[in-house]
Image (cartoon, rainbow, N blue to C red; front, side, top):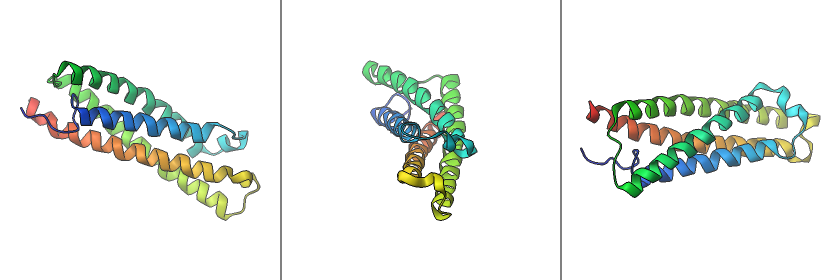
Length: 155
């Protein structure tokens, strides 16, 4: 079995996981610092914080596993482990795409409507948070596709 670049146990896979964690943490930081309680009255903003709160430990945990596999120079050849990683990546990538798009659309709507709650450029921070969540989705879906490509070779 050849090592698929970007799959678990490769340095590219480790880079994807660290990128996911970085973008999800930055999305959380843009969303959580300096916001009013108004922002949590909209469901997409709550879902963005919840989803990025799930993506961060998932990515950091798998980054630690990837670090061990890279340093030990062993690819992950366990079917069940890789199946769980593919399933988790699939669920979190779908959630990341959904919340990034919904948060961006609500923030755009609030800016366009001239809402009183969008003063001090707070809605621009929501848009930046949505952009970071979208970048998280890109890296998560890339990791999903690389691991999904590797999965049939283990059966």
